[in-house]
Length: 102
View 1 (cartoon, rainbow, N blue to C red):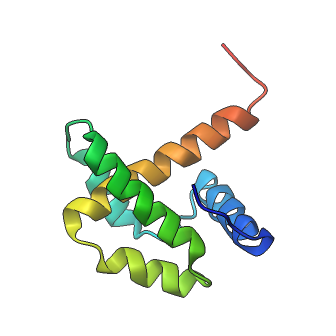
View 2: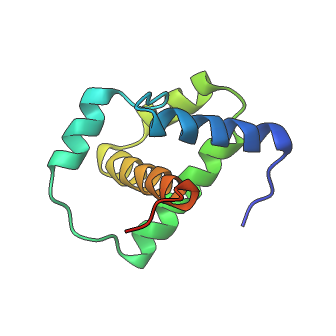
């Protein structure tokens, strides 16, 4: 678990809010489409921990430019896992904030 300051929390909330509206600040739209068009097996525990460390690192970077540069420098396989995890976080956030349940 990491400790983040209020500014970092505000940045994360902004990124999630933007993604929920379809504005993917950190990821190229075509790359996102490509990632979700590929069938991939579930992540192993080791892979999940690795992705978690990358998500934590993203949160600690000070600017969107640094965050975007960080994800662009990731190896493709890891980047794909980070993207899927990121959108899982966005989806969970949207679900938690939704008042309509079926």
